[in-house]
Image (cartoon, rainbow, N blue to C red; front, side, top):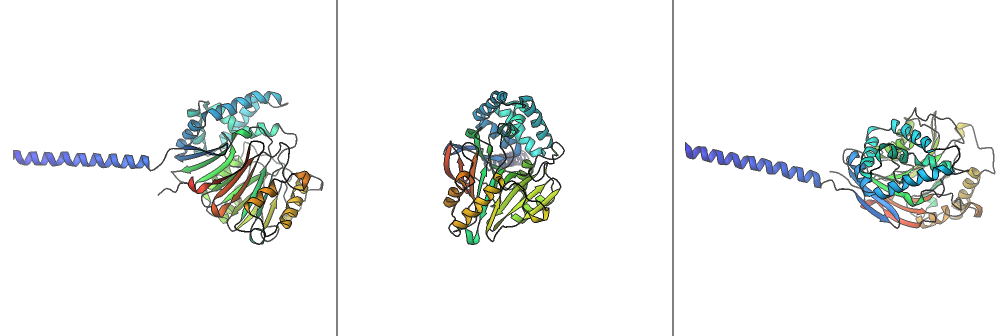
Length: 392
């Protein structure tokens, strides 16, 4: 009996050890299967690659970009004193409003960032509203443009070019952030300013691209505070769309806080979502293989057209059509860079000096983006394939 007991006891010990080893192995595998975040560079532009839960991604964001986040906030707090009719308290208040409308997962990112960066929640929320401060510094703002070419107009796969016009403020903090959520969602890359947890220009791992233009010239209604901050909606749209058709469903089932004109594209084509506070109209290509968008609704179904034909909205649109025709069938990513960098005064859409904050050329089929921050970083290529994670 004693020998039997010893054998049983020995076997039980072995079993317990094996179980513990198995648990330890699972634990180790679980940890190592989700890599920590990394800070990369595209020229001088920071590229943040974040992985894990939304809280973990926020913690990685704050840790990896701690210096830039604090510098960005301190710069805003100092420079805002130069702007009439706007105080730091105003931006703080708007930051609170934006945060209050956020889905919990994006609150988790901000909370993680606030903790590890040392900013704390109030400053993190304020930094998340920094484009309110940036736009207030401009007299003539919100004049973005976008142009997609494919089919007869491009030399190869669909190419999208966009100018984002919020002036030179904070250009050194233009940041590409790649979010790889381990707990659901399509991996998504967003190009905006450090500390801004939303999407105004982005592409996901399924090759769905979108970019936002202001649309208040066509619909000045304002539902701020009553509806989700629209750029946060765009983040969610990219995280849930694997095709342009799915993206269309997102727009058709959501009302924005203000009016926007959002261009969406995949490898097969592009459309313009003229997204009013009352609904959306999906404007198809202007010509077969060509879509141009500025800052007004142009779908005939609205029954309106901008009346001032000398306005930059019309001029830039006209210029882009002309450049597209001149280069029809020859537009590559490099040619698109040239087109969208042509100054307004020389027949293009680029607003020099110091009004176009950054430019993007995107090719959804290859998951490639080219980025330019005028007077800070010339065109630089980013292959997103190397940064997107696909969890098993």
